[in-house]
Length: 440
Image 1 (cartoon, rainbow, N blue to C red):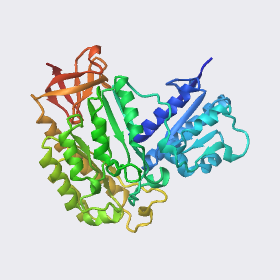
Image 2 (spheres, rainbow, N blue to C red):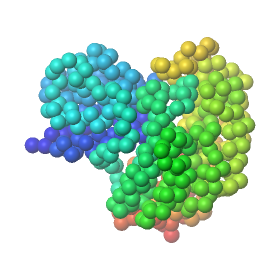
Image 3 (spheres, rainbow, N blue to C red):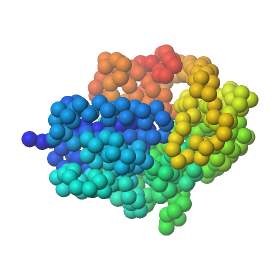
Image 4 (cartoon, one colour):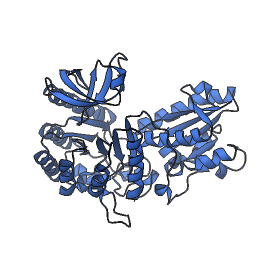
């Protein structure tokens, strides 16, 4: 009988893509997937430590598995991702029922662990894989992808920016770019399999190519991938504002397959806070980049990240962020309260902001942005937009859902044959987080 595995995933698209790699390895090792933890022979918790809330969710989930392990001693539990990399042996000590712990750059160690019969006897070192893995970014791992319409492709690993609040350089290591030919071959294979859209992933895609022996930067990579037949859309996340170049903007403008949407995290509208965050730009410099984007590509959709309550943030600093929201008018934002993270510089900064103040400021930011987002969505009513249909709507299985080139979610009544295809939709009603329309 085929053994069953279940993967619990927290965090960003990069983590979701890592789970696809984990699932690919397990599937090639004669494991079948199950949506039920009660049916699983192996449970992998793929963790995220970028915010305290994500870490709390993981420990809550891991605590739930104690009873499951007690009732089924043959159940194997593995912990992956950034918390695994940070906590490592501490997880094994605090939760002795965990069998294996491995970091984001050691996903390939699953093959060895499974190949050894996933035995957990022996010393603690044999139950962890947290080593530096310099060649990991050049390896090709099996993949069990979610869906057949859109796919994620990692183009680089790690980060060299060391923002004061961020754990990524400590959990995913320093910046390493994948060889361009490897990326091209992966995207070509996806196009041949029928995938219409890819999203290129990296902590800072704008710095792609800096450590490559070949002479290639991110715009060069985009131009190379744009030539692949069958591929219709190219997206990417995330861009660092400091490295957003005129060359990249002109590339987005010139190449029709590159979607008219960019995610450009501002984090704060205050120069003092941006400097304390070690972001490497002022608000004026950031705004100039936004103006350059809009001047070159007037219809581009721009989204951002904002952190509220960073250590030392005063009411005046907060008002600078509100002013930035009003000036730029983003299509959407991801806003969060500052969260203390181990190993980061911000942890030791003075004047940490009270939790109630952080919550009040976050609430105000979200309320203002809701008005802006809804206003922008209302402007699309009556327009006919091209939508790539992804599948059934999450809220109504009688409807289909897809995305525009600018990453707007559109729901409509359609047929199953529409899934995976491009359809023209007239927008009838704008909502806060989506659009509703009909086929034309």
